[in-house]
Each structure stands twice: as C-alpha cells, then as structure tokens.
Length: 360
Image (tube, rainbow, N blue to C red):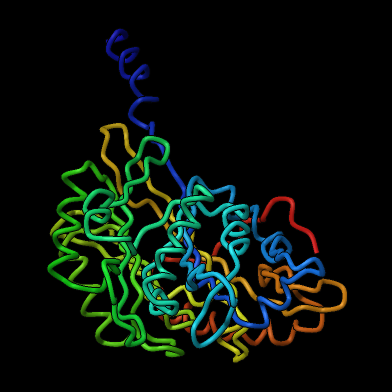
C-alpha cells in the first residue's frame, strides 16, 4: 500500500501538467489621411512609434499576436479613405509593438489594385513580417497555405478571408482569399493534414457600424463551427460586436466566436468607432497531449488624436485614461461597448490584469 501511494504521489505532477500559450488578436489597423499626416516628420520620414507605446507591453508579452492590416503598403502617394496606401514604417511599428502576423485579406486589399497588393507582400517580406490572406499568384498560395505557426510547440493554423474588395476585381495573377465555403472547407482539411492542432479563422465580414452581428455572420459562424475550427475572429464592422465560447458536442470541445474586435487604431470619429478590443486567448496542452481552447478575455483600447504634447495618434487602455481632453469620449465609448458585451458575451470576460511598464 505504501508503495502504491508513493507511486501515485509521484505521478500527480504529471497528471496536473499542462503547457499554455497566449495569443492576442487586434482589430482593424486603419491608416486615414490624418494619421499619415501626423506621422510625417520634418525630414519627410514617417514615425508611428508613439502610437503603440502604451499598449505594446500587452501585445509583446503574448506568445503570439495577430492584427488586421487594413491598408495596402502601396507606395506613394500615401492616401487615406477611400483608397488607402500607408507608408512602410506603419507595418514596421506594428511589428515593433509585438505583432507577429498581419492579416491582408480585407475590403481594402485591392485599393491600389494588383500592384499595391504585390508591393504590400514585398514590403512585409522585406521586413520579415509574416502575413496571410493574399498572394502573388496561385502557385504561391498553394505553396504557403495554410499558414501554420509553431507557438511554443503548439501548431496553430491561421486562415484569413474577406467578403469582398469594394468592387475592385483582381486584374492579373494575384490571389485574394474571399469567403468561399468550399475553399474554406478545403483549407481547414489541409491545415489538419499539415499538423495544425488549433485552427483560427480570421474573417472580414458583417455590416459596418452595427454592434450586433448580421444573420449572415451567425450563419457562417455556425458553418465554421460545424467544420470544427477552434477560433473565429471577425473584423470589418469598425465597432465591437459580441464574443462567445460555444460548446461543440460534435467535436467535444469549446469554440470561440468573436464577431468583431472593432478598430484597433483609426481616425474614425463616432462614439463606437473610436476604439476596439484586444482579445487574449489561452491555448492549453494537457498531460495527454491534447490541445484545446482554454479561456478568452478582452481588453478595451481607445485612440487619442494628436495634441501639442503628443503630435501623433496613440492607443491607450480605457482604464488608464480617466482625465484628459478626450476622456469623456473614452468614457462614452467604454460605456457603449460594455453595454453590448455585458449583455451578449458568453464566457468571455473583460481582462482587468495590469499592463506592465505602462505610463501616461
């Protein structure tokens, strides 16, 4: 009996062992004309470092971070809405803030047509920034899809699709991953065959400025859940929409559905477009080797326009901005977002942990 107890206690640490990874997702990284002008320096160069300084520790402390790059790096002339083209230092600053992967399939992907799409990929490659969602040609897509990141030994596939490209068609050989159920199903199957243990579908969908998901989003989310993907992360509405963890009896696991993270950074000026949510997802490998969604939480961020003190746009956690010129706007954004999320979120709470090394 004593030997049996000794063996049991020696196995207990193994029974409780697990390995966790944390992934942070951000919403739409916009680049309006005012943002470009604010980033321009006297020597003609562009600097975005100040934009992300206050939230960079939260992003870089994650094991992996993903953002929707909702602008081509299409070269000069740099332009904002309606057809975007951002300076290359913009993506560099996002990477310096801690982002590992940039999503490029969105409705502004072809704002500078095929040439702008290709230049975006060339620029990201030159900066050694991973990307997925658009490709120079079909052969390239076939060779790199699905994109699978090895995050501390856990293989996570990231698939990226968009509902459209504002009516601008592909004119040559470039490939945009549009929402196509047959293609998505093929990609999910291929991801599993390539060893993906977690599949994240990052999807550009829904109606702009609507804080509740459209029926088409709900239907597509159900389709993706039926495929057994693990994470469904939405963007495009430019406002926050609800998040939920669903239980899939078919696959005996939890699936995270996030309809929209809203804007990450932008110059949009209505109450609900001035900020967005950062999503933190924990993925767990248990002692038997199984990998599953652990838990998820969100943190609200707000964009402060330039001032004499800080001549650039900057992101700040809403809880850190209680006084200042834009504090009333921040409070209004927070109240509206929390009204929606508290009412409709299912098992996705607000993250209230302190951000290290943060300061005004």
